[in-house]
Every structure is written in structure tokens, then in C-alpha cells.
Picture 1 (cartoon, rainbow, N blue to C red):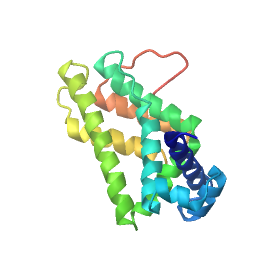
Picture 2: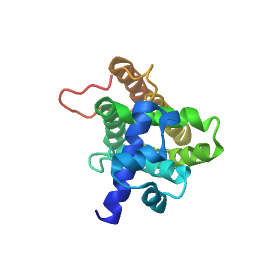
Picture 3: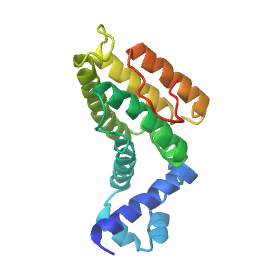
Length: 195
């Protein structure tokens, strides 16, 4: 198996284990066994458990980055990102489970906290860039504080990884209200509502 494919296979096994068993159930020996490699091979790709977890977070963030659609107006891109994250979490509940597990662990593990902070800052910068363009193009409330708006979007979307909040009706209500607060027009999309 090519190097990159083997590395990805190890990450995907670890991702599934966290989704199924929680963070405490992640065992590097089990990851190696399920991926069909020995523990030395796993350590070649991921010298520490923290490195493997970084790979899992990168994999999760790649799934979230897949929700960015660079077409449409700047306001469409903001609303479409929110819609796409909601759909992604509905289609891939294990993604929400992994992010919730990592978020809970971050409260007790400074390395994971730093890793999640790094990814959240990157997400915040991306969303604030989308909002800045939409505001400049006249698609949002003129008095919108872009940084606060980005923080609210990231916090709302992040909270949807928590099982108690991961209900389609609640997600749609929250995102619809967020869209109204932003003053963003709702782009047409068949069979999809945001409010």
C-alpha cells in the first residue's frame, strides 16, 4: 500500500474507533491491528498518540472544508456553508461524535485543546473572510460586527456536534435564526430549508 494511503487508513481506523468507543476507547494497538499493520508501522507514521489524534482532527477538518462552495454570491457562500455543515453532520453522525469527544477531552488535555484551538481559529478566519466579502458586497446588515458574526457561526455549527443538540429541527431553527440575524438573503435550494 502506498505511504499516503496507509497513513490515511490508520487515521480512518482511529477516527472510527473514537466515534464508536469514545476517546478513552482509542487504542493504538487496536488501530494497527484493524488497519492490518504492526504497531511499529503505526509508530513510523504516528510516533505518538497525539500525532495520531492530530491526524484524526485533520481528517475531520477536511470533511468540514468540503462544505465550502466557492460559487454564488458572497452571501450565498455564507448560507451554503451553514447548510452544508448541517447536511454533513446529518449524513456523517460519526463526525459529530468524534468532534464532541475531542472537545470534551480538550478540557483535560492541553495538547488536544491547543490542536482544537488552532483548527477553530482557522475556521473562524475563513468564516470572517466570507462575512467580510458579503458585507462589502452589501448582502449583510450594515452594522454587522464581522468578528462577532464569525464567532457566532462557528460556535453554532460547533455546538451541533453535541448529541443532545444534533436534531434536524433544532439545527434548522438555529441556522435560520442565524441567517436572519446576519440579514443574509436565502439562496434557493430545492428541498432544503434553513429556517
